[in-house]
Structure formats: C-alpha cells, structure tokens
Length: 255
Length: 255
Image 1: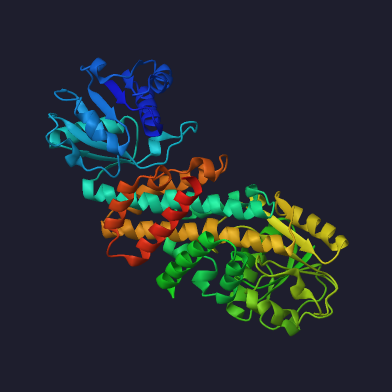
Image 2 (image 1 turned 135 degrees about the vertical axis):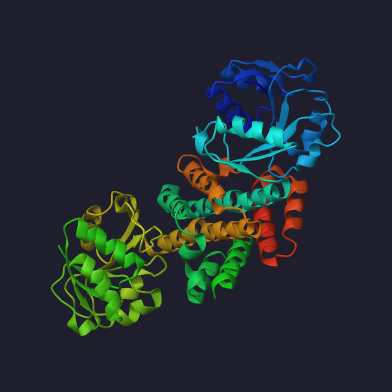
C-alpha cells in the first residue's frame, strides 16, 4: 500500500509510523514547514515536500492530519485524486469533503492522546471509521485492521460526541493532574507521590464503571472536609471555582 | 508484630491485608457492625468484635481506619493503650490525639484509592508517616517498610495539601470519566472506546509533567471547537459549567 501523509504533527507522526511498521510504503510527507516534513520523512524513509503541487498522485491512501481549520484549504489542492483521502479529526464532519472534487474520501479518527516523543502501542488505539461509500468503508476497514485491533464504525455526529467525551476524560483530567502538581509544589512535595494514585484511578475504570468507584468527600456528602479544602484554596479563586463546580456535580450525581 | 484493626472499610481492608501478608498477627478486627468485622476478620484469620470493651490491649499496633468524624469518639475508648495507635486519614491532623490519654500515636496515611473487591500491589502505595515522638516515628518507619517500598515523612499541614491534591487528581478525574461515560451513553456508544485514552492519559504523566503534555482545544485556543462542544452540551447545564470552568483554567494556564 502506498501512503502519503499530509501533516507532520503528533497524530500524523504516530499514524504514519504505524502504517510504515505494518509494511506500507510512505511515499511522501507534506508540511508547509519543510523542516517539519523532513523530520518525519527521515524516520519514515520518505520524501519531504512543502508544496502540494509536488504531491505524488499515485498513492492508495492520503492521510490528512492537519489542524481542523486547515482541512478545507488543503482539500482544495487535492482535487481529482484517485486514492482514498481520509482526515483524522474528531470534531470535523464527513461533509467537509462535499463539493471538493474528490470521489473517494473518509475519516480515520484515532481516539488517543499522542505526544511526539512518547512510544505507544498503536494496536490498541481505537480507530473510528467513516467513508463516503460502502465500498470505501470496507476498504478503510481493511486498511485500519493493519494497524489496530480496535476498529469501530462511527458516523460524524457520534464522532463529535466521542471527541467531546475525550475532552472530559483526557484533556480535563490532565489539567487536574497539573493543578494537583501545583498544589504539591506550593508545599515542596514531590509529584511522584501522586503518580500511583493517578495510575490506579485510570486502571480501576478499565474493569469497573466510574460511577461505581467514586470516592472522596463529595460522594460521602462530607461537608466538613470540603469546607476545610476550600479554606486551603482561599487565595486561589480558579481552583476554588473548579473544586466547587466538580463537587456540586458529584453531589448532584449521587446524593 | 501483633496488630489490631479498628475499622473494616476499604482502607482498613487493604492495609490490614498487607500487614497480614507481611507476616503480622492480626489479633482483632473491630467494627460497630459485627457482620462487617466478621467479613474482614475471616479473611485475616482474626477475631471479630463490635465492642471496644473487648479490645485486646496487648497489640503492638492499632490501625484506626474509621470515618474522619468517628476518630475522636473511638479514641476516647482507647485510653491507656501501650501500643502505637495510628490513624490513616489524610485530612485529620496529628493533634486529634492530644489529651486523649495515649502516649504513643501517629499517622499512617496511604495515598491511594481503594476498592474492597479490587486487588492492588500494596508495595507501591505511598505511605505518609507522622508520629508523636521521634522514637515512634522510627518505629513507624520500620512498620511501614514491611508493606510498602514508598514511605514518606509528611507533617499534618502537608498531608492536608496532599489529600486536597488527591481529590483533584483522583476523585475529580474519576467523576470526569463518569461524565464522559454519560456522554457516550446518550449516543449508544461503548465506554470501552475511551478506556485506552484514559489509561494513556494517566500513564503519560508517570514520566512527563502534566503541564507539558496538555492537549485539546482549550490549550490550542481553538474557540471554534469549544463553541461546537458547548452547542452539544446546551441541554446539560451542569456539564456546560464544568466545560467552561476547566477550559477557562486551561486557557489561563497557557495562553
């Protein structure tokens, strides 16, 4: 399979590397910044380009992993391609491909958080697929199965909900980790102390429902402890607001 | 070492089981509900009691793992004990032992989230120690080292901050997992899809600083995506409030 990677960010890097590892031929990596294209292309034994006029038009698959708001402008330069063009964005509808002069298109959304310098077992990353035709959806299934054992068909509306759910489960949780780190720093305590707790909290819900394993003062209705916590936060209005908002939501869920 | 466990909840169960596994002799398990004491005592090959008048006064260590607001009333019934009495509460100061007629006391706070039916490698659970005297702190170190390889000295003020940080990192994160599950349920999507993301988000900060691995629309200042997310949440005021509060905090942190 011949693949062209349009984009060189975190998702592009992990996805293109997974295809390379599965035996695909990575023809080209495009980025508007040549140095970024080159950095990824060198790993993939691929050609770096910074101009879509140089695009190899013979690929089977074009992975479009650019910022959400750049997708439309890139698509305008892909008119007439015969290969399957897929974007990888959670929050962008399949309809972005409408009237762009492409007959074969789809979505391959990896539901995972990627960092460039962090290795990851791609075979367990859920891939959410959608395509313009049933035939291309079948082909996309075969393509996805080469890199992941966890493949789902998800339409654009459901994908948007998934993306939103991922913001709560991942982006917001990571920010809470950061805030907890700042609380420790103020007392010169080591963030290492919290790491087993963070990992166990995530590990628990791999087998239990989050609803069933909620712990802490809010779910117990322990107002005394919550008030003492708010006292500790009294010079930090932003953390106070988060503490109150989340505790209120927990109490509303259980009490 | 002879140990008496006062309390039969999640923390008592895991801590007493860890001491049992390390070779300690669990003399008794107390709970005000005899059935609860018996359930744990049978696992520990121990005697169940529901009246502190029956307390074996010959133990080396008394683990006091009851609800925070029950500690004082239990202490009143422990007057004159010769063994070391430790509570296991994050949010309760060492001063709770003052004027309770005990000469040897301390704190052994395990910084972890425990569920009764979930096995856990206790050896990596951080234990935070404090004691009334330097001699008892040394003894508590020896005791703690029998069940965990991760032992810290933490005074009462720092322990309160740790406890608060744990609420952010664990209790609030778990609630976000629950909220993300409800978002998926509304669209009949499987919570399984989010599990690798949740686990990787927690795994990432075992080696990276949370500050350095923040992803999502808020850290990018992607207002368009955030507005679309808020549109999806328009009939859910509680989730809207959480989305806005946490996004605002992320933007304040980075932008």
